[in-house]
Amino acid sequence: MTCLRFDLRKKMIPYIEGRLAGPGTARLERHLLSCDFCRALLVRLRTGHQMAQRLAWLSLAIDEVPQFDSGIAGLVATGATGRAWPSTWPDRLEALATPRVVTVLAAVVLLQLGLLVVSNRAVLLGEHSRTSVSTGSINLAEFRQLTIPELRSNTQPHVATEGYVEDVHTDEEEGTVAFRLVERPQSGSSFVVCEIMSPIQMAPPPEGSRVRVYGVERYDAQQDRKWYEVNPVLNIVALKP
Amino acid sequence: MDRTKTKAAPAVALKISPARAPEEHRLTVAAKRGEPGVFREIYNAYRARVYNLALYSIGDSAQAQDVLQAVFLKVFRGLAAFRFESSLATWIYRIAHNECRDHHRRRKAPFVPLEAVLGSTDEVDPQPSSHEQHARRERDLIIQRAVMQLPFKMREVVVLKYVEGLSYEDMARVLGCAPGTVASRLNRALAELEERLRPFRQLL
Ligand SMILES: [Zn+2]
View 1 (tube, each protein chain N blue to C red):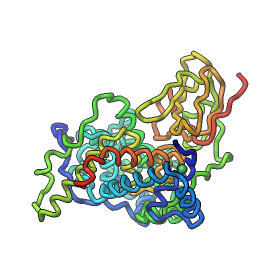
View 2: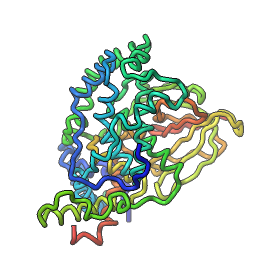
View 3: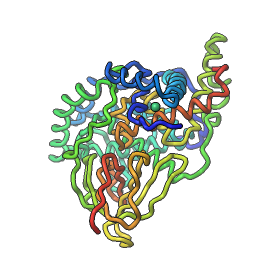
View 4: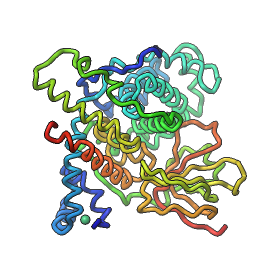
């Protein structure tokens, strides 16, 4: 028989790593006393974790990674968008130094000063022991309401966007469910691909229904396409058609 | 770029340490000031980590090099629009993750096993070491191969955590999902890894 304590199972790796706070440890250990399913899983995860830890020192060779001059400089100089870049680095930097860029970078530096120290010490300093799990940290107010076409110029990660559901399908191997969100059914205009990564916790909406998806938008500076990607992380709300 | 290469580097016991916070800060300031050579520095600071992620994700060195180029092209072009809502490292990882996934979706070809990437274990060891070290490397390569054969999304979460050393929060930012999703996907991946390696348990 399986067990429905998904919440506790998500804490198992932090528990194995000794990073789980006291009350969390007590809750998990209390549950383990009475749950064969979770005890068996913990044993498997501990073994998997110990094996995976050995990847850390067995990284791939840096010699194989191309040097900057090999292809990157040429690519940046000509560019995929067809815009010709100046051929020398100081000139390229001058080309980048538009008022907008300078403003953005100034803001960036100020933000970075704070953010780097506070939120990214764990990654940047390799302090794995400082990492923690916070599964309930998503705040509704962080989600920017945008129409599907407005996603084009968005650079904020958390968005809420609405549309009609089409083409719901399951990826068996990955254990995910995906669907498309369109402004109007069968319009052929721009659309959003939504991928639910934990289908057990978030059910896919029925095809043809109208929904609002609270999710994380993929952002990678590629703005010349007709489709976007929002992975639902908070909720999928059914709306009136 | 040398496209004739079909094999990646031998796996060398080289841990690529994450960039230090002051270093990342310095690069950001340098980019703001328009200092010459700053893009080269950003590239050199992150290329190994991006390449690692690409090679684990794709399993082919020539294709991983293509992905590496595409990632940094986007990084350099995107810096202007980037609002630094995450760290530079997380943002670069996110672009790399998206690029790897697009590549994975486009290709639809059978996954190239790690053996083809790393070559035989004979060429793995540049300087024959003691018998015990050699045996240990052999054992670790078995684990690495098993990871490379996990489904794409499981592999990625294992690599981000155990090779790149990201926290759950940063993995969530990179993968565009909730930290809870990262936790459950990591559980699935590790349970799967344990199952695949169970026959080798005594050996490992
Ligand atoms: Zn249980």
